[in-house]
Length: 267
Image (cartoon, rainbow, N blue to C red; front, side):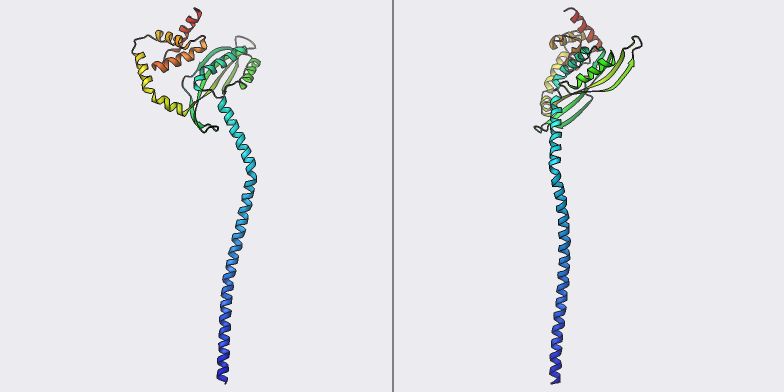
């Protein structure tokens, strides 16, 4: 009897120990899972808060982006095409004369100083922006020069001025000698440049014909003056550019100016 009772008690004890072991093992595993879920929940909650903060900034960011896009579009619209380069130089020259500034030197460069490609935000088309320097030397007073700068800021074209140097004219009291570099920006579609590249062989062929025609520099300049319809000294830029494009030659600028001046005097 005692043996059966001991066997019964032992069996009960074994079952209880097994149950206790299973319970504690399951509980520990459940506890670890709960801890992991709590950690993941806190992490997702923090990320949600960050995303909410970013989302709240979206309206301000979108507004700033639209303003920058509008400013860039307005700036691009003020940049003239490369075919309007002569119009910009004429405007600049006439604006100086209008403000009673005597022009001693006005020397536009025929080659761009810098070139950048950007994308038009309106139509997403690539545009080539070229920067041409113009060396200018003037004589006048501070007030007239200040008026010139004010009016230049409201012109229809985008151009900047740098390297301004002002000194007193030793020969005339109250008059200053002013020199600066004006930078003219022009634009051209990258697609147009690619199209022009297709016609390079034809242009080079025409240029070769002109070079081999045995024309003197004077004849070439007279032909350019007639072709471009030059009507003032400011058109010297157009003349030299025309000769460069048609013949590839670098004509003496002083010779071109003297011939143009002679023709203008005979009108």
